[in-house]
Length: 117
Length: 185
Image (spheres, rainbow over the protein chains, first blue to last red):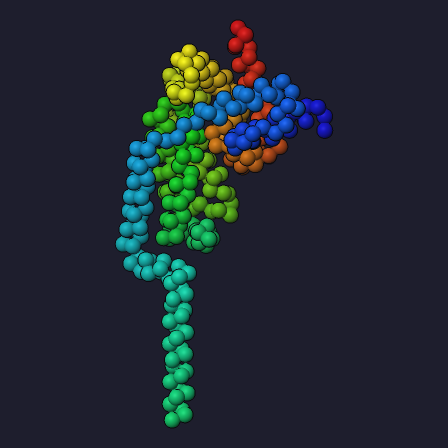
């Protein structure tokens, strides 16, 4: 690895640490140029802002509304889709499976009981 | 788990599970998409409007999203990127970072002078960023706005991980040199 490649590697490693909010790696072993580039990087990572609470709440309400509208449209198109979705859920599959197994066991028990009578 | 269900629908139908998945992904990615857009557009209101547009588009297209082809991150940031490009196209502006908006600073600096210096530095850096070519701008913005890995940036920009690394190193040094030259003027 030549000198430039080594410098680039150190720059990229430390850049990833800066954007992750971690401490620099081997801070003292860095050359002046790389340190300056990382200082600039640190400055730029402070730019992005977080969305305001009002905006977050408003957009979330809109997305939730859109999702509900979409579900309504789907149910109107296919009234059984909701039931099919329920059947897809593992908890319900397990419940229906257990009920089915209990019914089969009951029938077998009844047959055996009637035959032995 | 949820992704398997979405993938199994074969892009034909949005099930309850995929709606739940979308809601979860929305919570996770909305702030990230907003940060990306606000890095490219410094007008807060416009950044918020475009973030809304991205998630409306994403919801409309969610039934054709295939996690086996690309991650949700790649998919949503591609939509965000195209939305910003469309925005500049509609407003007939050059596709670069807006630099003419007053830079806001947070009150974390010890004195008003420090705040002024910080604001001026940020404004100048934004100007230098706007002078970079599109690919360099995108790589820098994706890295600094959301701390993406070079591989993730490569997936969005259709570049290799190594290529992204080289672009980032070159561009950071270029920005640094422009900044130092300006300070020495």
